[in-house]
Amino acid sequence: MARKTKAEAAQTRDRIVVCAREVFSRHGVTNTSLEEIAKEAGVTRGAVYWHFRDKADLFMAVRQQTGVLLRFPDENVGDPLRRLELGLCAALHRLAEEKAAQETYEVMLWKCEYIGAFAGVRQDLMTAGVQFLADTTALYAAAKKAKLTPPGLEPRLAAQETFCFYAGLLKLWLADESGRALRGDVDRIIAAHVASRRRASAQKAV
Image 1 (cartoon, one colour):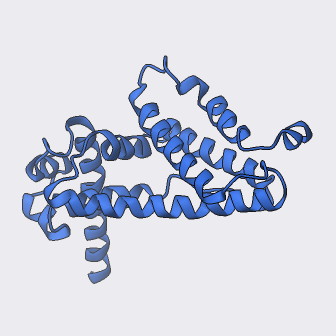
Image 2 (cartoon, rainbow, N blue to C red):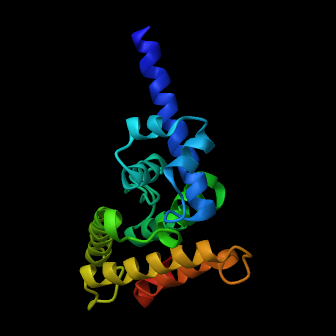
């Protein structure tokens, strides 16, 4: 019985998280109350508070349930710059294919104000940015070592530029609901960005 109760509690928690994501996506975080989320999930407000301290805690659970959006392929898949391109493309493709991922990032990038109780959430989100910089710096460093990039390329600076490029692309992709601005060309946009880091002789060899 104890195991069943624990399993049921986990199912209730998951349902609250899913419903929170959907309501946040429709109305924005600020305009959503925990009462609304409880009603959507078919539970009491007390049940929401039993699983989550506050709305910020629930927001973080929404983000964590979606998992990591960006993963770079391992060394068996192309050279470092190719892996960078494939990873960025795969992240945008996942947004197009997975409703949950799209809703989560829509909330994080367009429908949440990072003030008050959410000020700490912004710092947590930047932790993902630090990891992005570490991963892309390593890819650029490997590409430089393999002489795939121009001699003067600085891996850390190149990674920071790609971070700004990716963050802007992600946010604009979400805003382009009609698909008229850039969604249809996202792979080509990413390919052009990565190609600009590849030295001319290396481009000819690809």
